Image (tube, rainbow, N blue to C red; front, side, top):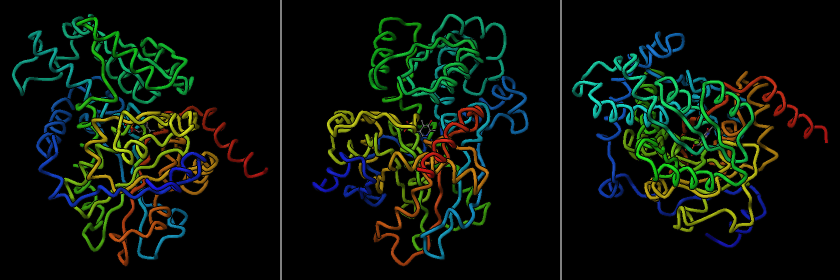
Amino acid sequence: MDAATEAALRAQHPVFWSNPGRRPLEEVRPGLAVGLDDIRAAADRLARFGPLLAALFPGELSRTGGIIESDLIPLGPWAAKGLPAGDAVWLKADHLLPVAGSVKARGGFHAVLRLAETLAREAGLLDGPMGDTTALAGPAAQAFFAGQTLSVGSTGNLGLSIGIMGRALGFAVTVHMSAEAKAWKKARLRAVGATVVEHAGDYAAACAEARQEAAAAPTIHFIDDENSLDLFLGYAVAGLRLPGQLAAGGIEVSRERPLCLHLPCGVGGAPGGIALGARLAFGDAALAFFVEPARAPCMLWGLATGRHDGAHIGELGLDGRTLADGLAVPRPSRLVGRFMEGVCDGVLTVAEVDLPRLVAQAWAQGGLRLEPSAAAALAGPARVRGAGLAALAGRPASHIVWATGGGLLPEADFAAVLALAGEDACS
Ligand SMILES: *Cc1c(COP(=O)(O)O)cnc(C)c1O
């Protein structure tokens, strides 16, 4: 990284970093530890457990047979300001994903189901690979899971998804929360019967403590946000489903009409999984850009230095305290960073003052209730265009702004973010 970019990171100024390690898919593929087959297996698992999910959450999921997927919504001209006339901007409405209200529904639910499946097989509660998964909603399975504990470190939404799904299956659940986690997320978890442990330190510290506790006990299962392939593969299912969804919407993707994904990034699992799934599904016509708060650019720092989880934003004089609580992570995942070395096209950072503004804009212009972590992605299209990348030169692009969360946000919390934007506009 050049000195000017590093200075801008230190000053919390918005930065666009183009990844010099990005390679064509054909060069990257042989070195990848997972492929389309692994992501298909995760999609198959989610499908196999659809009937179980529909039985556990009938109000929200019986309509889709337990499949959890979100719509692609076209955004108006307000979202395309500053873009060439041929560009189009879409919003991937993961903030409205049922049950979890965030992108964590795919990754978190997949990780819990994978574990439940393994444990239930060992205990003789689930027959063969095609056994009836609704058996896991029955009393025998519930009694068995009650003797097992799921443990997870979370800035909020991962804990919510693991807590809601784990408790529905009957597991005991302990969620280790960092200082950034919002009070309503803790309250909601306690309401479903999860234990919330609050940590004064940052996200990495909360995870480390949870990991240690689980290592000591065979009935405690730690879902490791920084190292879980099951989480990553669950997130990647979204990328795999994109071609069908875009085709149904009449959106063409080719080298002459590239697809740009704008993905909010914390430890990297959600954006990394989506980016890899999309690259494998579309090839080089799909470009992935990560969006981070200027106060917590951990993936940018990890990729640019090549040190991944050895890189900490404290080295840049940053403490990670940001309104985008879902992205308030000081250190990226090594597992994900290694996958992204040749896959991620670039990372951009969003100034702290712009986060509430983007939330307010999405609400005023699009009627979208997004949390700051999700609204950050709205900065992507114009910033990517402003970077003048060769792959996009002279070509019209389709942009997907990935709205990663906000659906469960209580009215008062949403109003408080809007008020921040208002104050700023007046000052
Ligand atoms: C978790 C989360 C992200 C980022 O996911 P990571 O796997 O941590 O990179 C983005 N937005 C929201 C709302 C989230 O909850």
